[in-house]
Length: 140
Image (cartoon, rainbow, N blue to C red):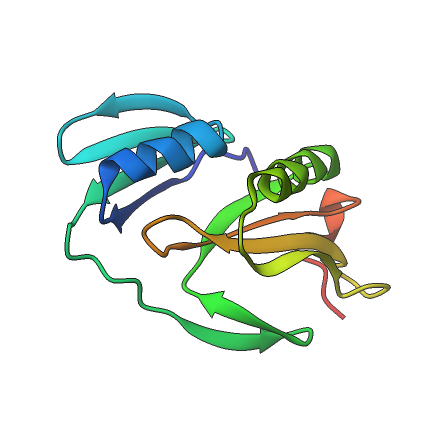
């Protein structure tokens, strides 16, 4: 099956901060925008930050491999090199990780590099990578 880019629209409470975070720190190319929203290219996928000045993050956590994973969250599966580069950039920037860069499910099907952090509006993001993409949907 041909892979196509996904589209995700979500709320942020400050477009200036969103532009600095997604456009600056995450180095997402900016697309169209208005005074109420901004399109970004997140590794070939279209994400759209929509302004809601009253937006409050809503999150629960679920246990996954000994960690409390925030839900909801979104992100991208990167190559291992891209993931390592992003992890270093986030560390250099002093990002407060919810889950620091780590290897989850070590030695098991679906072993993956992962990290979680929040955007300035409190949206949880996860970036992950696999040594081999055939592990993406691996099961027991």
